[in-house]
Length: 314
Image 1 (cartoon, one colour):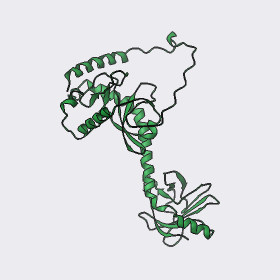
Image 2 (tube, rainbow, N blue to C red):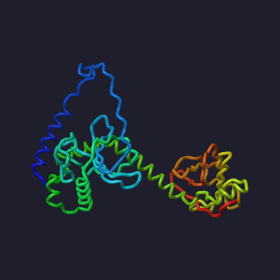
Image 3 (cartoon, rainbow, N blue to C red):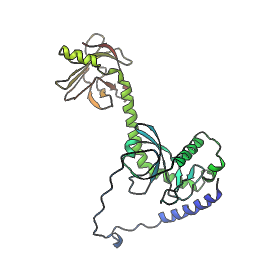
Image 4 (spheres, rainbow, N blue to C red):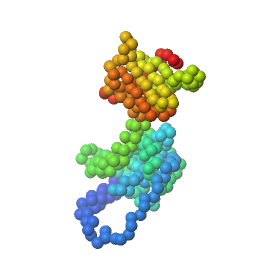
């Protein structure tokens, strides 16, 4: 770990603090008066690959991330770059990049899982090498599992934090705040993708089979099934009239009357899309194109309930 880095970091931190204390220029100043039309933004680079260096669309500040690994079809592991020239502590490392502005230090402590949808709304400005990709991943493993760093790893990083009164605390708080809008949007997308995956898993067995559809077609009837709501004794029926593009969902009590125990619950599709609300034990959804039988219920507390088929066909 490099004490020289710590000295340089304190110098940069003092300069950065002084710059941010300067009075901002007014938009009325002559320096801002121009007749030029603003340039149109360059289209995002939607094709994503491991080792990409990406510029985030944050107008307040230039911020870059390195895409390390693809964790799932819709999810990547990424690490942001610092604005400083040297690492702040032992959770940051020097990058191989010696020329690009704001590309000298990687914030391993700020590593996060980023949705593909979010990264697709950024610009690619370069790539890291396979060697650097491997170095970063090994460093992250060492941090996560509290492994001892090698001499080569220690040469890339700085001195650990000393406590809550360490002047570097301000830097870490500011860096978290700078990324907050990006991370908030990313979390919302990741939560939605996780929820979609949950719905798709829960509704997988509810899909009308090819045999059911063919039999319904031969008999000129609609695909139909009976099922039990998970955790309850009530019976639900699902019928889809393809020509009418209408879904009929009904819930029956044990005496075969319509059950109102699920009123105001939401009926949603396999990706969590809203279909309708239960009222008096029924939900009729019109203008629904191509329904395949996959759905589930959400109660008033946003808990999700799947269905278990108990009878196929009509």
